[in-house]
Image (cartoon, rainbow, N blue to C red; front, top):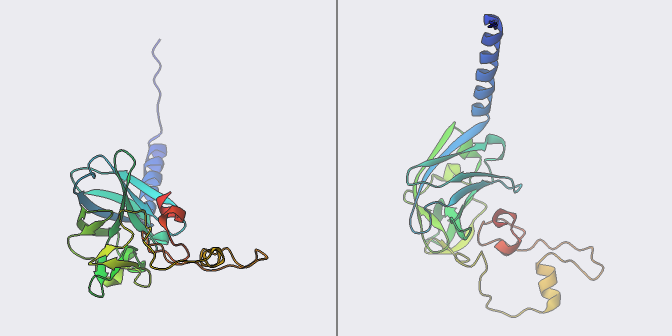
Length: 212
């Protein structure tokens, strides 16, 4: 015997309304970051939006423009990192440069979340980083945070943020600069600036949570 199941219209309407409200709330609390990545090694790879807390949102790269929904609460301090299909770190996306190419801005600021979407255009993969064809406006950048660069290229690009030092340091100096502190272990040196992500308090991407 066939049984007929009747679903009250009021119930289905409420469910649809709830789903719509939840979707609108999510859209209002996030920023749709759109970008197209071109260049060798990008095809089939991944794009990660990494917040200052280390949490990341990931999407797979394609020949067309891809997008990431980044929470507005963490848009300030977020960087974009590229990983190849094989898992090789391709480097960060450089949003803009300044001071004759000696500063590379890799970090989004609060202004990036002013609207529901952020269109970055095309970024081309180079040696250890990717650069936007059209620099992002300063108002969308976290300008106090930058990587030391040469002609717009972060000096640690292609080397996981590491750079060649021009001086020798003793073990004690190294410990202090890396944040090891004094002899009692209670010190807290601040460290330098990661040359891959631009974050203060670390000197290499090997210790940077954004490239782990």
